[in-house]
Length: 124
Image (tube, rainbow, N blue to C red; front, side):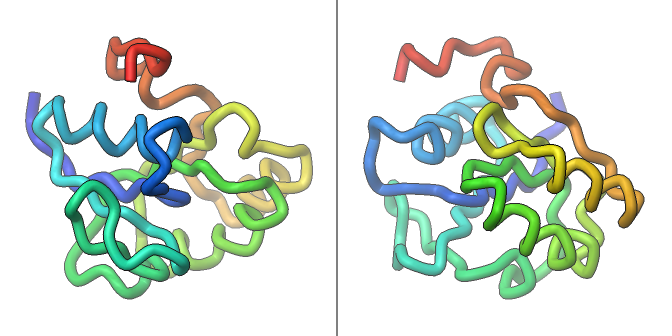
């Protein structure tokens, strides 16, 4: 497996939240993980960024753990940053978000990114 740069959008310091569980799961798999949350200074000891646009360098993948109405507003930032793969996790999707993602021609996967790693999110 080649390590990737993964932005966890909606990363949280609350270890019960999926935005935290995903961050730890991707980190344990050896990926470079970047927490994205405008309300957190750091998550799990990693500096957090307010937006993917604030992250220096490319991002290989974003995994999204925010409410759909927030996610819709972030799609344009994902497009601007040129993120080639965007995972919209259960609870973060909506018909409006998916329609806008299609309109922007973004590569959106609607599935649990932690499960796709072969891990059980409830184990965290």
